[in-house]
Image (tube, rainbow, N blue to C red):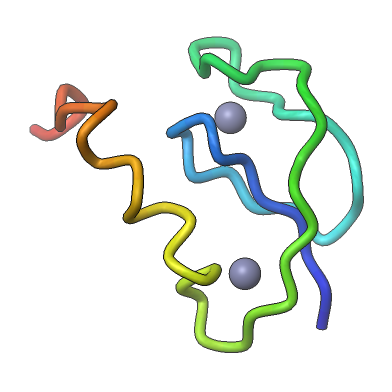
Length: 59
Ligand SMILES: [Zn+2]
Ligand SMILES: [Zn+2]
């Protein structure tokens, strides 16, 4: 089923259209992108931008 993802790096996923809610995301308050994937990979949307965001949140 369709869902909405943030491509700003926060990896936010929502079942409903809207805007990114992560205050520390570059795309905070920007519209989420519609996605219809069924494998939770979101067409690689979260993997493509690994060059832009280092793993700073890694513990
Ligand atoms: Zn975001
Ligand atoms: Zn998806």
